[in-house]
Length: 442
Image (cartoon, rainbow, N blue to C red; front, side, top):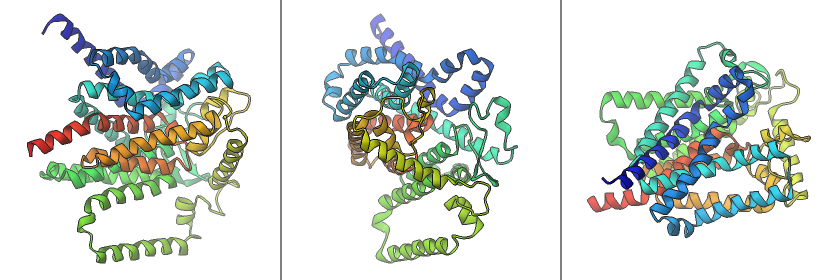
């Protein structure tokens, strides 16, 4: 190997390692950023931005690699990247027209565009080096074991254990409750809160369901079967104690969808009838038990004897009404950084509990249309590759996260967004060639 090729290989390796660090480290971002932020308060903002800084540093490297490997034509003719460019350009236009201040703007750009940037960076890597697909999947699997494992462990630890590394009302609260009832503690694991933990669990369950259906040969040994069963049970437990109702619904849709899509040929009309009867029975039972403490707390979050006069349902309703009104009155949006955590540095901080209203509030109606077009295009592309177990799991989890987005700004959370968009890039960059190779070998 000559010196030029050796330098290129080293550059690609460094590029890949940094992306793997981001993909693996994102599951520990919350405790690390809080812990080091408390130790070094003067550098807390810099510490929180470590992943965005690394991604920005990788941009010129990605441009160089795309140029060397002559990928510009492929990317420029791909509607996904065309939409990404237009979507990012809209942010630039809105920043120029509706400036919200330096800190809010930078925070807003980071929150709204980091996962799309990560998608592009991962895609470039895997178009050049598809062998890194396995590295990314292994890194993601280790991250899932850390999140789910600590989530289970947290059930046996003091509820405020995270306060010892700096969690607080000023950083991230160490735990939440269902309407201030301490019989129902909502855990964080290593994420920023119980709702992101629930959304992350949906991704994990989708991958595990697809593995179960498509990759049964991987579980021939008893040890692997037990390990898989333990991970699946732990994921369900963590999902449950997150008490995230949107995640409950999404998980049911996602797991049911994965199983139905792959087992539909084996499901006779008799089983459809049985399934419908069971479903109606469950729904009927929940309706009949709606006044019980269990259902009131876990599903309705509305216990008349609870400790809070204002329930989370009230907050959701008020946020949705406010979001719709703002979107209707401001078709161009209010400005980047005008909603969510980025808006805390402005004179009018605003929390919007809907991903699509969140986007519309910042960059207007056109922004919602462009994002919907981009996300839908990715889902359609994933659906076409559904013969790949990873593609069907990312597709179904994307559907689930889109449902969660109706009640929460799901892509605002860095862990959930970077993990899902990173997996989507992994599939789209490698699945086509892999499936052709597998078909050829057959």
